[in-house]
Image (cartoon, rainbow, N blue to C red; front, side, top):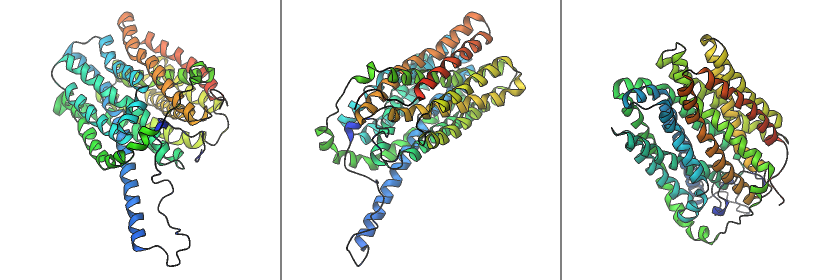
Length: 435
């Protein structure tokens, strides 16, 4: 994938001057005296700027799931304190997904208007405000804060891969691995420590801690704002050519539906697995750590898959095998004994990590041009997350109607079969349209 035109590119109208593309200039041509002191200082400055940008990217990744996965571990406490039904509680996960769908298409225009770095900074401020609002003692604030968090995450979901494309075009596989691993690693931490934090601070206090992380991340974007200002003229002069071909492409719809189904698996898992395991006899604290195990397995899968898949012509076998892990995992939680739960939870997590990173790669691998890659990304994240938004609420509704978890688990096990089929289709070599 190194530097090819099929590399992922998410808002491509924001192509600007190179930054940290080849590292410090250690070959000054015909300068027989070698690297000057000034050149050495410039190289050190570039290295420092690159390190700050990498830190900002990885910290941003850390905020893109942790404010949401912590809710799954605390859902029982939230329901007990607020009186929310399972259907209403499922909305706490569904609202961010609706925001993902709405703001995925708007993110490139926002970045063109304000600059990528400035937009990321604003997102961290909005996320921090949403986390604080969500923790206020009022049910409307709980849902409004959740919606704000989701809108900030939605924009970052689109912009971070594009920023990686722009500033690290020769290291996209590695940076994508680091990005997705940071996202899943912090999601695991949030799942595991939410219950212990709630014992001393209550569930509202446990959720507000993640505002510290988003606030610190905002500070790391401050040094990047000057770069955003310098790019202003080139950004406004750039144009983004929409071809519209992705909306008519069978390949694009296969990628989009695969995106939706794999997202359903993840968000149903983080929303309801702790409560399911608790009803099967597991303590709330241990059930929370099972969600952490799921995230750790996801982190491993999301790190390794981009490095493997980027070296193959077709990913249909990888996508089908990764999706089969959902069938094994949810089927095992449904039909097997609680003693084997860690094995099946790990399978679900590995499936989440591998399928998610595959979808991110498909934005590049299934498009011929940069513009097509951007359109495919916007389509897949918008429609895919809208499809995924149905999952947690529907899962809770089925539980409320059936009075048990067997029927919902049977339903998602059946959906796993569809995920396998669409993963196989999306993984076949092909493109969304002509160049």
